[in-house]
Length: 255
Length: 60
Length: 223
Image (tube, rainbow over all chains, first blue to last red; front, side):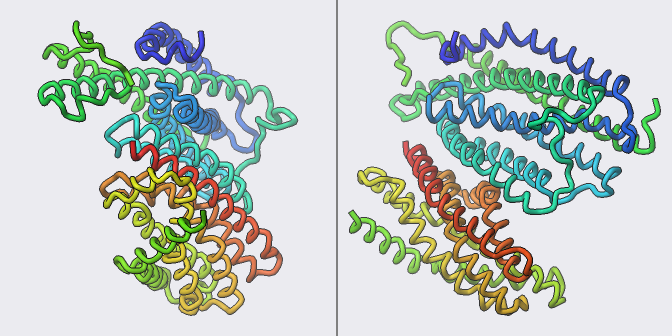
């Protein structure tokens, strides 16, 4: 069972139908557990008090924002290099979800920063590069909407996604020249996490919950996109049948 | 439960995230309904994906 | 091999200098931006000389963004782009030469105008020189990165605004290092060469990635 077995949209839709209820159920359970742990199990922070609970949505949202872009970049490779038929569907559907997660990360970070740092915003390395990430997501979503033919739009978006993937580490690295107020990495570090397990576990559970949420939404959105392309090709075919011999009749866009 | 002096910020964060997630879910579900309705509408007009008898569509 | 390259370069240069006066318009826009900012920020000369390099860099970035949709649009409209695609020459080189010609016609005038505009911002001679040199090294990067946006939006009617939106995130590192180098020349502790060499590196990287991505996008826009 390889990814190429699911190049056929119909077979993919059947897979989605089977997998989705389980994923949704797992996601709900994970969120229930995570939220319970975030509010009732995790202790108050010594300095920050209860505001540290914002971390349990801020950090997973930020992780997801980056993971989503990685998935888009992989999908773009799938479109341009391996020419998988559903790769551009995956990329297109991931963009709004990724943008939403980035927005959540920025807003929760801002609401966390005001009581903690005294300011809603500061131009340090991490905040700036996440803001740029949001702009790139929105730019990609706009690019998708400006081209009529989804296949051509998919290829253009794939190129832009890949160039952006090169750009993001450059921005992160170059903005590091400025002072950074944001907390340095304390989970994904070479020496292992430095935060206490009582705080770490709710964080990981919430991260799993967010990841599952992403996959649920992504699969549902991919299903919708496949249906949307079917509608489009049917309409084109109908229009072509009404006026035989037109270009619209001759081209057969992929699902 | 007492969330401390900055409860407003905590509630605002969680509330906004909840609203965003609900917005995403709403988008996905409404889109599904719209597409299925369009497909049903087209099928009612006789335009469907069932391949007709004679010509074979060669997918490019 | 180089004769077709030279011909293309001369053609593009001649067209952009002649049609619509794109070179002069870019410089005029640069002047407009540099003039408008003191109206907003206030005429405090100390403040202006502190943010001067940044204003010049932002003005150059905006002026470049505005001129970019001319890179491929005219050729697409009259069919020359299709000819270039069919000509059998490496499309990446074609894009590189067009970018070079575009930079000479629109980017270089900005670099030349920068010292004069620096006077309006009360920059001292060292700062003036630093900004000019950094613009010289960095504006090619802006044009080359902009070519990616230009080729992605070439088939769109009013692609200009979308082009700017797509290019700005990609151009941010260039802006950061350009201003950083210009500031480093004025304030002693930070060496000028470090950010400047990174800026040059960015231009060289853009010289590879820009044409490659742009050519790929043009091929897809053409099918």
